[in-house]
Length: 174
Image 1 (cartoon, rainbow, N blue to C red):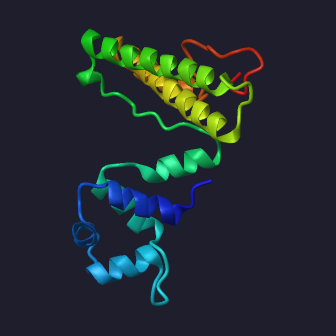
Image 2: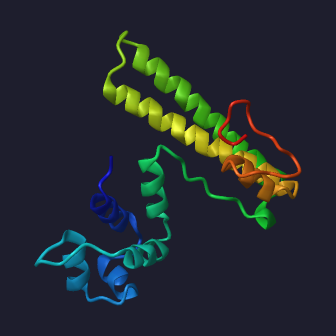
């Protein structure tokens, strides 16, 4: 499990902005930002409003990733219908196919010595999650292309879809 502080530090490092620029966007001085980031000098970590603003500044929804991981869920970017066409859909599908190939290769590599250790399992799991994200994104993109994106989102999030009533047997989405 990733600790929230480590996630925020990593997100700031991976950002194209400096910590000084991020602090300025949050309305803080660099030292105030740094003290909160590392919980120095008796300061507390960022509150939820600061973290919400921080993810908007860096352009990555790290809070969604963090909370989804807590419950074994995925965060998938919902494609914009106006940006969707057959070429984009094909590109997304090619990424999904490539990710599926990486899953198979990771499994083969893990089984090579006859024993699958924790690191190999973790690597295969990461590849599976990547494949699932591309597959879900492909489904949403296809639905957006055909004007049924809202229903597709409802299906993926297990909300009732009046016009279709599609769910797997025994599903909690009944």
